[in-house]
Length: 597
Ligand code: ASP
Figure 1 (tube, rainbow, N blue to C red):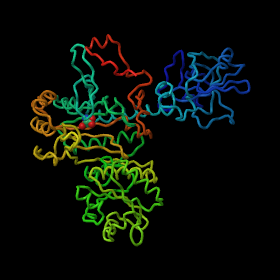
Figure 2 (cartoon, rainbow, N blue to C red; figure 1 turned 90 degrees about the horizontal axis):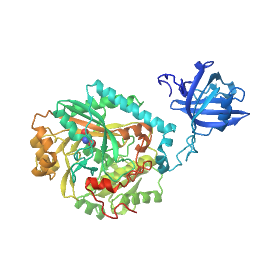
Figure 3 (cartoon, rainbow, N blue to C red; figure 1 turned 45 degrees about the vertical axis):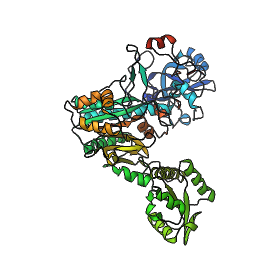
Figure 4 (tube, protein in one colour; figure 1 turned 90 degrees about the vertical axis):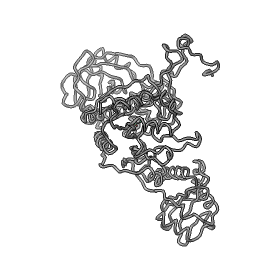
């Protein structure tokens, strides 16, 4: 770890990093500084493990050699900050610690200074193993950050960001900042608003992404832009969401899908490769429809099989009412072969409950036997249906089959989620495997039944593939692509609309009329009329990428100061009420009762 650390320029506190007190320093004097990681008294000697960012080194306070410092050594407590000096000596063979790079030596302290006295920390830094509540960890984040695992996460994050900058700079991209106080950029979430004092009653929106600015930079002739950009989305938080999060944002001109994909495959190979994950190129590509039909999701985990299969045709006209009527009502029947498994009746019924909790009307299970199926519905199915389903699912004797008949999105999503859970539960996932894939050939729009309108699957600036027919918006495909890694969407982008007229038509199809388009996006429509090159790009979720590289589920583990699941920051207390005077200046009044209690 301390390898690659630049040598220190000596000052009054220290001349050597703790992690660099190695055997080659034996017989020389060093000055080191850091935190008391651990202290023990032993046979009249005081031993201290001193910690700085580069690692640990053992200090020995000897009553005869340490002089006045011995008394200090005696009083030291965990997390005190000290600076010491003394000769480096070789440890006797039986006291060598093979776990530590510095484990063959120790510093015999001759001088010591207490730089800062530490109160007893609310949780132990050293032996912390996850039993401390997250609230506590975030409230005392500066202590939590002292732990190896946290430090390593942020160091890794820095490595990833540096590799991104290095690769993109080498390809002629330049990093350009875009505003934080701006207007709404529709990425499908709620905006965070910031009231304007100078224009009371008006608000800035924090950017959900730099989308419109990066397009304007292309119109501005920059051709190759990137930014490690903070984005803000006021969403209900889930485990993997933060109200402010970081994207690697990229845009390029005079390109089509293949160019963007090529650049990004090389980028991913470089960045992940520099963190020890080999990406084989070209990456796999799966069409959106195929992803949904085979995995029930647009972010499939490809580290294991258990693919979904369509069984609608097998059961169309079945004697089994539940299937036949569902199909007549537009349902799609999907099945999955879970393989030869020992599953009890309770396990199988448990899967039925899971399916209904996930929103399906039911789930049919079957175990393939020599002469038919063992299944609660076997008596309703013909031998021909069972044989055809068995063939479609490639099933052999003893295999467990799961079947869901429901509206197309529901049967896909439910069985897809069961597939994911079974993959985990049955131990089918090799934790060292890495499967990266592109999801391509997206529909441009999706029908939002609740809002009774078409919505962009990506964002409204995504270019249709081919002519866009406003009379048949549902069949339009998009020049869009996502990158999925082990079941996580880590990035996504598209070729953009670079023609004002097409942009207007797409706005129209999603219910943004001329007047609204002019009011909200007039500046973009204007720009598109002043010579807009064809352009496209992508954005990656940096937090998620680093979390995956770090082997942690939670992006909070790779963000220095994250917020809790309810959007609060236990360290600073944000969000917090403000002074009445501040509200008055902003022309804002908070309805009484709001926010109290
Ligand atoms: N702005 C998009 C997003 O945040 C990414 C892109 O289209 O480049 O998802």
